[in-house]
Length: 262
Image (cartoon, rainbow, N blue to C red; front, side, top):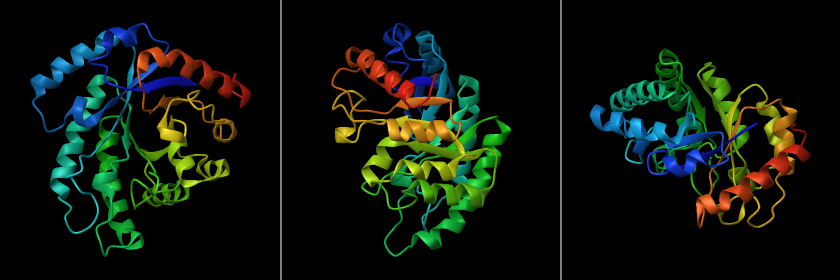
């Protein structure tokens, strides 16, 4: 399992280069900045490559004002944004774009999740085609019920991705969101053929593994049981990230080993 970090490779390049992480998970809105100038992106990319780690993933797909459910959807803007995001992702070596985007994805008052599902799946199909053209995969991220009101569980994510049925629209498993929802690890088993990415943090204060001593092995065992052995990113709050990172990596590697990973 490769272990990565959600961070800015631009501002932290020198420190990342000497850290123990395998890859960086960047930010679509601040790094790829699809609606920003190309020259500015080129400058950021040059700086980020100084971290000497692959920029494998990018999260925070849609900004909050680019709503993707309900009557206020501006599909033309979303699709144009996605084309640029995927093009810049491919140029950066980023193969996965995480689609959490709780602000953009939250249901407006009066719209039920069932009514929103069909139009959202249709949009995901169009986004999947855009991603396919650039060799990128969109990873739909179920967000916990405290942060979003649409697609908040692994089961709901599985249902949505299966309805879309597109090879470039897959699923992300976030252990923190599952913990916040009190979802048991067994929910992961139904996603066996869909999971392309994963995030990890402890439940309490969304801190790095080892901060509060939480046992994450049940979720790691479930990921191992479905044959998932790709990437696992720290998506955590830190007091001092790079001084805390060695312990977090050591704790996570130990729990991974105790969960069946070599």
